Length: 228
Ligand code: ADP
Ligand code: MG
Image 1: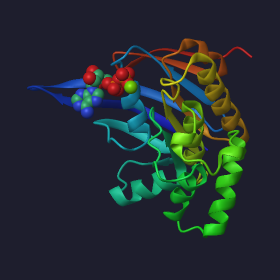
Image 2: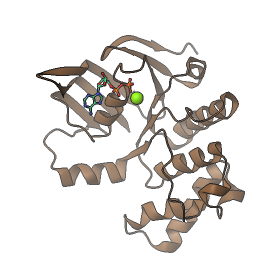
Image 3: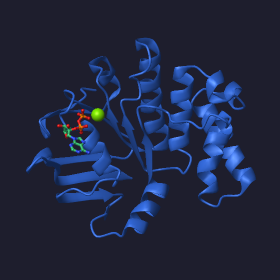
């Protein structure tokens, strides 16, 4: 389990020219470890995650998931890869208002053709893992912001991804609840063995990370390992 970005350059159209959002970025995240990505607004953090998620194809460079380069895969193959190997957690949970917490997860599995019973069991197991055993039958409006973000994280794990990509999951939470969500991500990374990339704007969360990458103007300005 791992994700590797090799020499990634990404540009966007910008007036008559191009804006360079990522500039020769190289980064490997081994399974069971969490790499935090920090940097000012506009430095390229979300672009980095979108490329890692194979949602955007870079101008140059390779994304390698579990040792398999994704370059040259068809859209359909990329969709399959994302479905089975990559869990994505965005800033806003985007839960479906009419579904219970358990159903938010089960919907993911239905896409995958698992039996309904197995999907239900797995959903309940994951809700338990994120501390929501008693909230399984609640709908989003009956959950706090922190609980909704936990459902969001559990949902991303439904298909047992090897790579977990998380973009500023604490931006809508107070500090204490935010820290609890980060701790949860670190624990899940270890217990499930995911290669986790976590974008955060809050440097106090960096203690939970194995490695920290600081992005400035689309480049990796610093890459530090936690001292154990
Ligand atoms: P961050 O997540 O660190 O705030 P982003 O990756 O969102 O940074 O953005 C990096 C740069 O790319 C910024 O200058 C931003 O304005 C630009 N950008 C991001 N998305 C697009 C897009 N879809 N089209 C054009 N420019 C974009
Ligand atoms: Mg962003």
